Structures are given as structure tokens and as C-alpha cells.
Image (cartoon, rainbow, N blue to C red; front, side, top):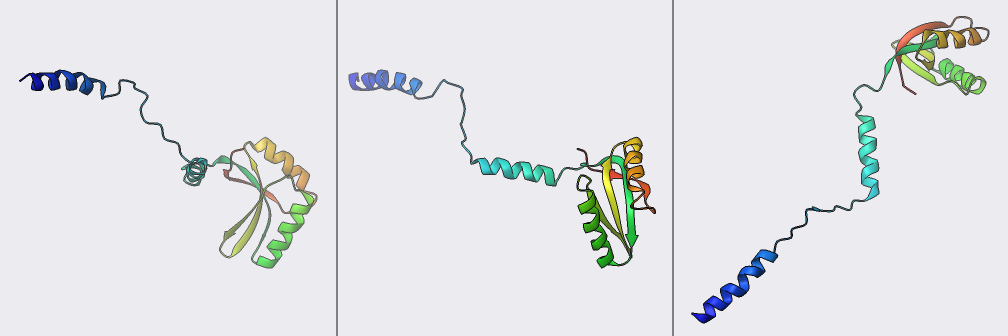
Length: 129
């Protein structure tokens, strides 16, 4: 009986201290590459990554080789502007810029008109800066 009582008195406090009382929780140390992959996935699946704005259409043709030549020519003359090639069957179209306001688009329209007399302003979905 004494042995049982001794064992009970000895093991009861040990059981109470067996559980940790700190609430720090679990610390997970993950590779930084995982965080980078998660960010890339978020960017890739962003639902609405565009907004309404304007672009300037500088060229349109059905000839793919000609549109590629015009693209290179434009990039060399105006490297500060972003160029987009769009294909609406059977036409290839070159559009320029991500202009949020019509005023900003009109400024570039006037600047480009000497080199591209057939250009025109197009409402489009643009990439935010």
C-alpha cells in the first residue's frame, strides 16, 4: 500500500509538469524559395490585374513579317514606351503604352503622329504601373 501511495504521489506532479505551459506554438522554418513561388503564383492568378485606360494603335497589317519589322523599328526609336502586339484574325496590330488618362495618351499621340500618320487612340485594358 505504501508503495502504491508513494508511486502515486511521485508520478502525479510529474504528469502535471509534462505539458508545456508556454503558448509560443509551432515554429515552421521554410525555405525562402517557397515564399517566392507563392508570390509568383499570386501574380499569375491575379483576377483583375488590368484597369481601363488607353493605348495608341500605330500599325495594323495581315503580314506577320511586316509587323515584326515595324515592332523592331518602333522599339529602337521609342524604347521608353511599352509595345503590344495583338492578333485579331486576320490582322496583326501594334499598340503602344499603358495610359491611364486620355490626356496622357493624347500627348504621346501628338508626338508619334509625325512618324506614324495613320495611328489612332484606342480604349483598352492597360497594365497598372
